[in-house]
Image (spheres, rainbow, N blue to C red):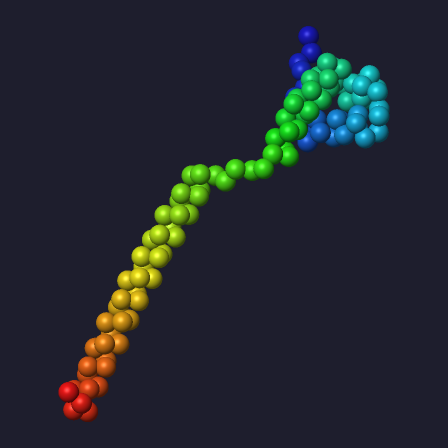
Length: 104
């Protein structure tokens, strides 16, 4: 008894492309690639059943989106803290300059 040969996705696509683009009969492809005709029919069926997924708009990955949102919020908080620190330092600088020049 022969073991079944396993084909990669790339090999299956190559065989199906030859079938669909070049109109090569399934019997010839089966003989050429030593595949059972039923396998080719099943691959073709699977291809067309999942083809609609290719053309559907992609939904954003909510896990990635929430992680990105958390990162954005963290960076915004960091910027706010820096702005407050800069503001404080500028006020201090102005007060020091006033005290030095005696503009109280």
